[in-house]
Each structure stands twice: as structure tokens, then as C-alpha cells.
Image (tube, rainbow, N blue to C red; front, top):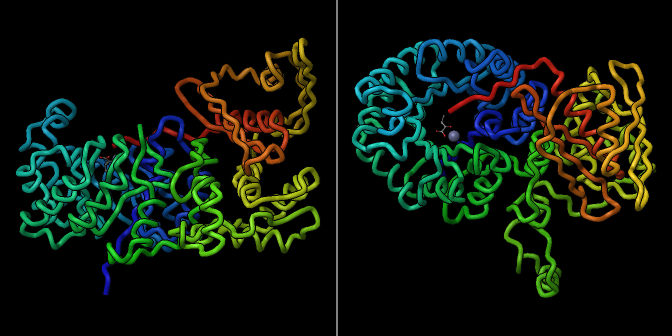
Length: 512
Ligand code: KIV
Ligand code: ZN
């Protein structure tokens, strides 16, 4: 029988560390549910001790998720570990993930500790954690740049103290596939009790090799857990991408000979959800989930695919959630058809009232747009206001006038705590005028650090999806809005971002 490859998703922890990708509790819960639908084995829900907000997120996810193990990161000290264990108490299956840096550089410059002190702290922290929980992962931070002799000493000891998973992070994305694979192989061969733990890979993408390094860690090193994120989200150049690593192992089962429990047809919905929540747009040529991943533009390729699909396709688009028939619904489609399409897309809304809200929006959209694509539906249900009725600001209507040679003018009506207000302004362009019109009332003082527009389904008939990133008093939030009118989409995105800025949720990003 083939070994199982454990998929450990850290979108909600390491992924959230990307500047601007911080998520609210509700957003994290929604993504966690999608990860459970994907049948991710372990969900790293956050870093409970880093803030009260993160503690609450980990706890809420531990209360909600039943089928995946829920994990919290913790520095290797008693306070962090106790806090993480407390947050994980409601979990069906919980894991404590301890980390402590072991490279000479990190020990000397960051921790200002001697190797012996680090060794002792790793040992005592693992012992402390093991008394609280059975499932303990230990990560020597910057492990790949650590001295192998010292690493063997530390890892042998933490395994003896009860660590059940040993993760070898390439924290700074410095590794090369063959070298990283052999690094792990060497550790496993040298450490006498290495067979008592599952070995795991955790690779950053600074040199664009996170997926390749992770796969080498599996193939050469014998790791049986991969740490990854949806869309490869993560600090700097990101982490190993879940969809790429999973599809590589599945598509090349002949080579890897490993089982992966992921239900791949939910991959695209997860990718859209993460992208829309964080405002990190997926590049069109991104493997597996990019808009062009299964598009054949050249005549020779199209001809080949029509004659025999496997001439140019190594994976089936449907297997990762792309629909074979892309035009799905129109204005005559009923609630049942809509609900069924949501199910086929792997989206489950939690209550009938959420389905009703989403369906009302679908009808509204179908009145203005004759063909509704999967991407439109995913955008519609990813909009936070479908699942969260308690927003401070809500879009009502917009009119704007722009003409060559004249300064554009916009009038917007929106709600503030349920009460309608009207704002008017000029601007450099219609979008600028509309957002300034909102600000005549809100006066947020926020600085816009990103504005981007993306056509959801390709053509000028499609909905525009706008991402706005605002920064205020050290907090960075993303707002997303979709509409066939990109000025309206921009206003929606701006109000969405303002709602997030107003929300009291604490969003201090984790470290590690
Ligand atoms: O990159 C890293 O070293 C980490 C650890 C905390 C696992 O994220
Ligand atoms: Zn990391």
C-alpha cells in the first residue's frame, strides 16, 4: 500500500503574514471551512499567543472544524504553548506547532542565545507541550541553514521528548531541490529515533523553487507532510502552493507513489476565495488555478485537444473545479439551479438566509449580464456581505458623469449603520470622484496603497473585480468589489475596505 502524504495548510498563518493579507475572523472561518471541504489534513489556524484576535480566530476554527486537525503555532516557551493549547481545547483533533530558530545567524543575532541555551529551551518546551497535547510538531526555524550536527542533536532530543512531527523549514527560500532533499535524508539517517516522527517540509519561494524543493524533500528526503498555502500565498515570494504540490503528486503518481486525501474539485473555489479575501490576484498563467491554465490558444493545440484531449492536457480542468461548460446560468435560472451550481462549485453557504442573499444578488446581476459564469458566482458568494449583515457601510447607488475635456463628477448614495447618506465630488477620473464622494462623509484618513481591476471572466462584458488596499494607523486591509460597472465595483471595494478598517477585530499578523 502507498504511503499517505499529509497536506498541512498554513494559508491562515504563514499565508496571512504577506503584507496586506491579514484576514478577519469571519474570513478565516470561511476559508477554514473551504479547507475542510478540500479535506486538508491539518489546518494551521493561526498563532494564538500573538494577539487576542489571533487567539479568538484559532478558537473559533477549533470549535467549527470537525474533519481536519486544527493547529496553532507557538514559540517554544510555556506562555505561548499554554495559550495555543487553550485556544485548541474545543478541537476534535488539535496540534501544537512549536518553533525555535537553530541557525547560527538566528541564534546569535535574533535570539541572542547560545546553542546550548537553544537546545535546552527546545527540550523543555517540547516536554511542556507534550504534557498538554499528544500531537506535537517541532520546527527548527531557519532549519535548512542550520549546522546539521547541531540540528541532529536538537531534533533527536525533541523526538525523545514526544514531538510527533519534525518540520524542516527553508525559512528564507534558499534551498535547491536536490540539496534540500538530501539534507532531510541525511537528518533522517543520522538521527537514531527519526522513525518515531513524521518528517515535514516547509519551503518559501524566494528563488521560485518552493514546490520543487518540497517535492524533493518528499521524494529524496522521505518527508510525508508538506506545508503549503492556497495560491502559494505567504511572506515575500510566498510559500509552497497547495494546488501545485497536490496536483504534481496526483498527476505523477507513477513517480511519487503516494496517496493524497485532497478532494481536488474544490481547489478552484478555494483559490478564488483566498484571492478575493486577501486581494492577491492570481496571475493568468499560474499553474492549476490561473485563468489560462487550461486554455489552448494556438490552433495546433486546439486541434490536438479536440482530437484527443491528452495530446496537450495532463490534468482534467474539471478535476480541479473548472467547469467543462463555462456558461452556467442566466436570468431565468431558479433558486434550485443556483443552489445546485453552488454545490457543484464546492461552495456551501451556512444558512438558508445566506443562500437567499446570494440568490438575490445573482438575480440582480443576471438582469444586467446575460451570461453568468462560474467566476461570477464565486465572486458573488465571496463577497463578505453575503455572510455578514452587520456592516457599517453599504453601497446603494452611484451616478457619475465624465466627458473628454471635463472634470468627472460623481454622486454616491450609501448607508452608514443602515441610514442613507449622499456624497458628491469631482475627481481626476470617475473612480477617483466616486471614492472622494464617499470620503466627504467618512473622512477615514486612510491611505490607498493598492488599487487594481481585473475582468472576472475575460471580456469587456464580464464583471470587473476591484481590489482596494487601505492603510490607516499601521493597519492594512483589503476590500474587494465586483460589478459589471467598474466604477461601482470600485465604490463597493472601497466601502468593503472601510468596513474592515472600522471592524474592531484585532488583526495583528503572526510571526515565524
Ligand atoms: O518559515 C518558517 O520558518 C516558519 C516556521 C514558523 C515553521 O514559518
Ligand atoms: Zn514559513
